[in-house]
Length: 58
Image 1 (cartoon, rainbow, N blue to C red):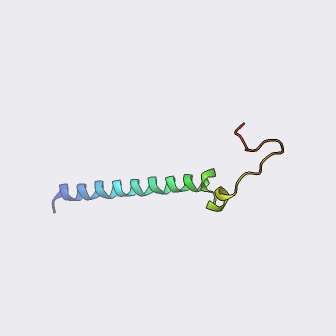
Image 2 (cartoon, helix red, strand yellow):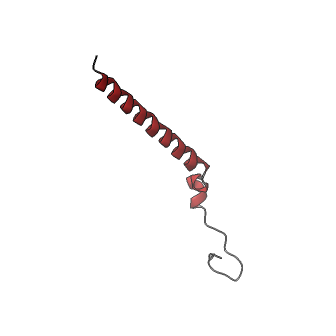
Image 3 (cartoon, rainbow, N blue to C red):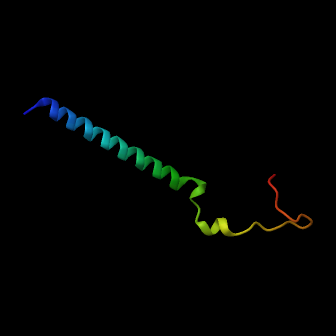
């Protein structure tokens, strides 16, 4: 058995495992972020305040 082949296999497996862990961490961060709201929450307009025709950023 060629040892370089088994070493290359271990490197490939290690990289695959690291990438899967990075993807899992990224997805957990996305799910926990405030941007992970349902799309319906974005579709509802903000109520206008009396005397102000548009809601402005404060």
